[in-house]
Length: 237
Length: 311
Image (cartoon, rainbow over all chains, first blue to last red; front, top):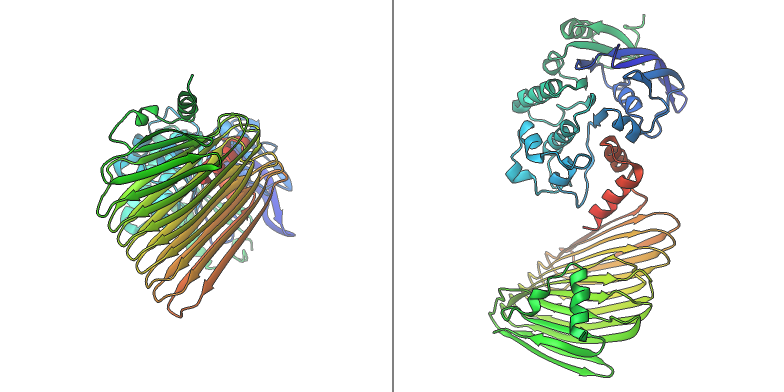
């Protein structure tokens, strides 16, 4: 049985169809890369799976671990094992990194998870999760917080954006750590070297999956379409 | 039990350490209503306090060049359910003096209580004063708190003030602080207040940057719920070359509460710069979603965000 199973998912915003009759599935402990040009609906799919406010499907079914999740609120989905790291994580005044990493599991060792994302506990535990952190630092802390939750499915929306090139391998290591900890990863990325670490990949184009397979196959397909801006004409011809 | 013991009991219940009053190396002044209960001074600090039926007056001076190792504790309160406490403070920091003052204001049973603080503070050249005032109020809301301060910060002087009222009902709060900062002086005012029920919060803070390169920051964090109201006025004037000021106000509103922010920036010198930001509204949606995606319920998420803002 698939961990995540999506059938016939359609989502509209402001009278525009963003996702159309989308089918998608993921297995437990699988890293699945989702690629596609800007505006194809990758983040929208992530928000729909997480259950973010304002993201309700017009039609379709989403099952997680055998359970229908369309009617569940975001924290109820978190409770059954779905977690998400946003592309641009928000900042919080007055909340320390230590508190942030132990929000739900107070017994978790925050140092352990900071080390996993390459940050020194000595330097970061006492700092605030506010605007004093750089974009890259904030993203690493978000990844650490999701690792600490030990979810069944971690949705990582462009975990590599805002991270310097030299740290690409660190991010790859972190994504692999999710798998080692028993989590499946839905990995949204624009970088081929990151996508290639996945077990499977899918390309999203104009609201639907147009290609699924090994990351290399999907990368080759994607590059062959030369779609700098997605108008869907090539993939959907 | 003596009044001092009662005050210290309330102090302990509010998280304070009563041992500070027994330590002769730590200066303190404790008063309940208009009665002085205990006082201790240390070398380099002069305290002259008097009690009268109309209130307490105290003159405090930190002598030239003295840097007090331990903070000075001020412990004020009205322990009965009714009463008035008026305090007049004249504080002088002589040249290059430095000290930290911690004021604990305790009103655990207040049903009809007035607390009026009137302070005049003079920070001399190169001196630094850190002042933090934390209030612990009871659950009844029958209290009126009126802190007023006029502060002059001399050249190269530094003044940092923090006002915190997040425990218990606020009642009626009417803060009025006015600071004037001289050449290269720094003035930072921070206020954190959490209002519930029918609490009424009025905060007016003014920083006048009258010396070249003076710096000022007014930071206000208010959360209100139920039928509480809040009006925050932050005024900064930049009147000299290189003066830099900022007003930063955030108010979180729940239920039927009503908040208003009035940032006023006034610049009279072409080389001065004053900025402001004000955010009023319910709890940020993205923050809520992020915390809920970490497994917190909506109620837990709001608590974490509000607690963070008021920390």
